[in-house]
Image (tube, rainbow, N blue to C red; front, side):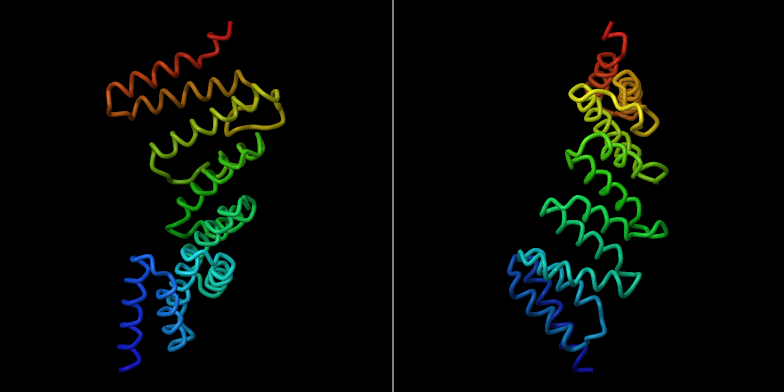
Length: 220
């Protein structure tokens, strides 16, 4: 049918414009497709991406929100889009809220939890956020290296927070109480786990040295 051919041509043109960085043309193409098939969410999602990349965050967020609330198949990509937009304006809580839309049954769930942990880790909001960051990846099937590296980053920052502001015995960073001794034990273990999966010999020795350096006996 002619409508199908027209839509296909517009989609191809829109994707090419998106690749070229011509976001206005991409928006025009995707908007035209949506006008032809207003019930389809794919062109709306594409339009949201074109708006996001073109600096029209508010419009993009509204389109993403519509996609996420209309069809379960579009929740994950729309949630990631909303999270990017909110993170760009330093709305950590909003970004986390968007990522929480991705259900545990989705193939994108592990990535959503990893990004959730990163948002909280990078927020600079202290030990409670670091605790939430660690909880975000608890029990989630992530790549082993990714999980251990992120765990090390969170523990490193937690030790820094405790060194500056003191221990908080009512806060736990994963399995470890937010006391310097406990966190050092956790970080030592994590460095040794990283060393165990490291294939580069020099890097492996560096990680073992870091594990030895962080051991609690170095404080005596």
